Image 1: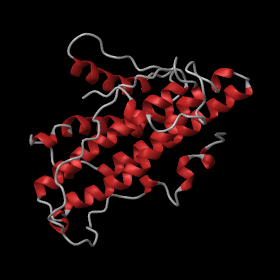
Image 2: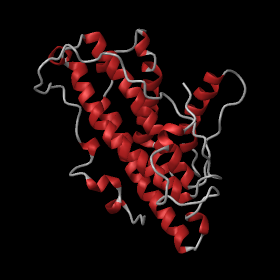
Image 3: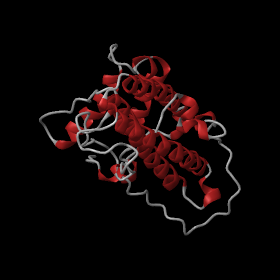
Image 4: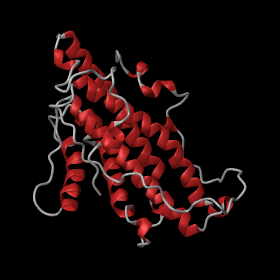
Length: 257
């Protein structure tokens, strides 16, 4: 793998960037199917990575960041379709309540992928997000999710300009707020309605910030290679991103609610 800027990134392979598409309120033509399942998927709902900068080289972290962003591109298309079903549930054979609940769970899962991407791009620079200590497991997880965004807001963070300030940072906090508000939607708890939020703006800002971060991280990898830093290639666990570091980490990480 030889990152050389956005032209070689996962964003360049699409005809247009996924976040340049708006969530369209118009339903697509599709016959209602009453047999479609209404239960949300059982995909993990939060992530505390077991990997750390000590166990991943910068290039391995960069590779996983790319994978997380590719997964986000894929899931964004699903999220857009889910939003259309939530706005016009009768066209797809769902009740309004089931459709809205399923979309909220979909968005919660989408934020999990956002957080994965943020954690791995921080790893490229050797930055570890502090974990919560003491208290129940759920409180430690809540503290960790909060600390991911607070770490980006530190002015000496190399990603501060891309993710730690301005509209992108505001959108990240808004996405996290929705993740918190909607994570229990499947349990039937009352949650704020979808139309209260500008989801198109939130997703565009977040994915745009990740694209800028890709360029910064790719530059860091190139710098390490030019300096002849062996850590740019190999982590302490052996092997590099191109040999055996597949997609298994997405299901092998330490997940918490």
